[in-house]
Image 1 (spheres, rainbow, N blue to C red):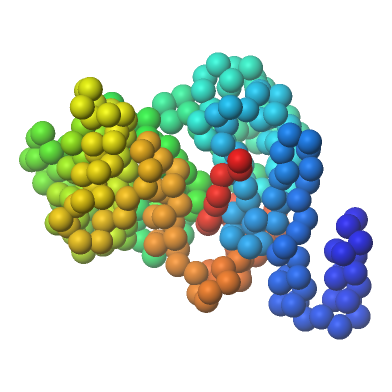
Image 2: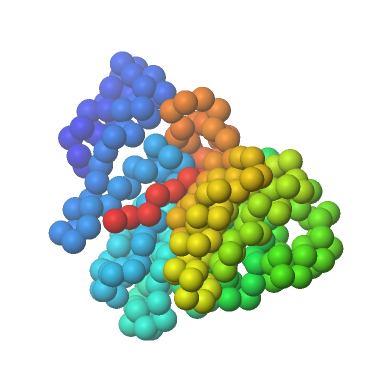
Amino acid sequence: MDPRIAGIVKDLAAGRLTAEEGLAALRDFPTEDLGFARLDHHRLLRQGLPEVVYGAGKTAEQIVTIVARLKRHGHPVLVTRLDQDTARACGTDLDAGHEVPGRYDALSRTWSWTPLPVEPRGEGLVVVACAGTSDLPVSEEAAITAEMFGNRVERLTDVGVAGLHRLLERADVLRRARVIIAVAGMEGALPSVIAGLVACPVVAVPTSVGYGASLGGLAALLAMLNSCAAGVTVVNIDNGFGAAVAATQINQPVAGTTGGPDARDASSAAETGSSPSATPTRSGESA
């Protein structure tokens, strides 16, 4: 055991520290050095969710090692941008060490695992509205991430502005949302249209879908940044993960300024494995 942790435990046992003081002291450490990565196991204490693994650029061996170390701490695990070739190379090694298997979703390129079923919580519904079928890889990354974070999610697919009636037919769902993630490529008009119809926050995700002058999503990004609908929040191109984080922060607001597991409800503090829920709440991907 880290001697700093041992000292804190002794001080807690002796009554020299309160439980709140001990928890605050633990928030700054430790990390685990794997040589190729430094895992932040105490992100759960500071932000309410353990570190998320960004799979692009990592080898199968690196991903398997990181996942195994995170699972040993009882953390829910999410790997984003895990392409099919790397996922096949990882094989069943990702499921080692626990009887509950993980789930790979080829469309969103995500792999997820929780020791217990995720129980939805939060103030309401997160709606993920996808403009076109070609935008689904990004919208599914957002939807699956939001579900992993403990949000109740409803998907609206192929509701782009080229057929506006398709969106208006689902206006009742839009109006029930606490927050809406709007995913669109091409000219990126969908978030502006939605934001003009609802009172809740809208998180806009530009995608790289489109022909030449879409410039790999830059056209959609600029259109969303220049939306005439007030208050639209815009994340980076194809960043469904980032949109889900923003939506979670809206749907599950912290009580206070320091965040951490005491900021929402009692179950957050026990998500290392003793909680009846494995619901994560906040995240940042690993480098």
